[in-house]
Length: 305
Image (cartoon, rainbow, N blue to C red):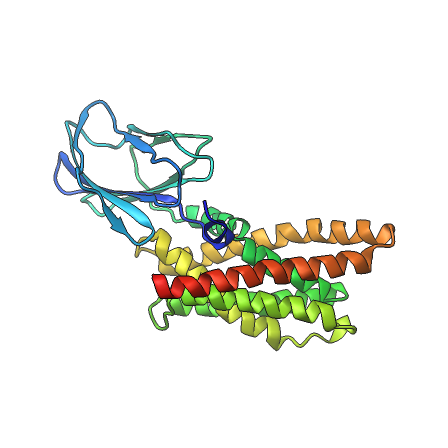
């Protein structure tokens, strides 16, 4: 797996099953190309499948269309995915022809998924998707890590993170609603630029209390397009769009907050051994160096995409 792939994107496999008659289902099986091996779906024994002999590339996925015939409903049965990588989750969406929608996750720790007899639509899984996307996106982690070096005091920290949160919530919503859309590859390159600038600020700033709120707000607008691109790649049901966006965003925020105690603990430990300034300096060069690599690689990808 390339460094670029692991630097930003959370791309789970996608299993979409649509019921088209009492016994027939159409299955779209989308598996990320960046994974070393392809997982396989095991349908219930009362189902027979006609596999796609010629899978097609669809963006960052390999798309396989499977025709499924079952002697009874999939409700109450178990789906299983084999050969799962620990880096791949499977987002499962089943649409029954009476407009019922079932949505859940299959993970490498739990490869069986029980489809309930009574389906109640829930998009709660998008909260976990948002959480995993932030923690799986090293560029966003570096950005949050860098912000802490520029802020002194809890009140200033709350203001800064709030402005970043509000900003990326705005562009996440606008992009997901198709009001504004930016090319994903270009957005990723600009996100890397924001982190380079952040590293520069860490090196030159002496007064940490005067970081202007509009810097994290402006950068948050850009990062919001990156979050939206991930949500578009993952795909989501048109039902309850507001709640989907809200839960995805809440998941991102919970992941950001979960990082803060770790970052503060590191700063505290290095302060205790009188190496705070050295830790800050090394961190700034690390953040700047990695983000510069991402910027050049992502810019190069603009010309070969």
